[in-house]
Image (tube, rainbow, N blue to C red; front, side):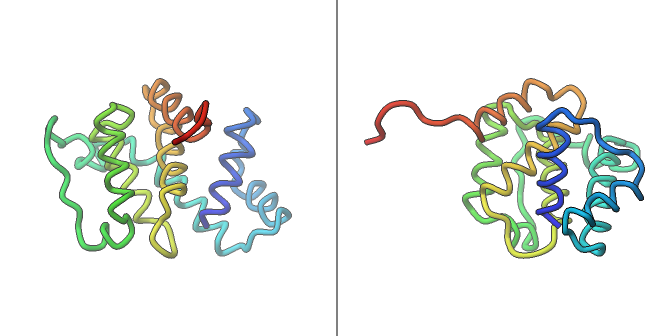
Length: 157
């Protein structure tokens, strides 16, 4: 499923191509690209739920986070997000790439992914997808892009 999400993000978002809104047409295109229909369905539901997270009436936990509060992860969350990933989320919050709300959106979307615990690189892409889909986070999205794509200059010691 994550491969499909990456394909859609890179094909439509990164290349500024208009996303097909017809679910059937998009499913056909993904099938032609070699993805299995059951995985396509899961990926499209994942994207729909990402869009739905912006509705704070249906997801009140997104609006109820106190500034300066500390996030305690559940056992299920720590199984999906290792120490390095949780530390990275905290780092993103400290440098104000993520707010408490967008952090919760990222964790929600991570928990909906199938498979093994997420690698740090995969987590970065989930963060980028969430920021892209959350209105008002254009600057944070740009910062996250820089963190992902920026190559270190000079010699590393």
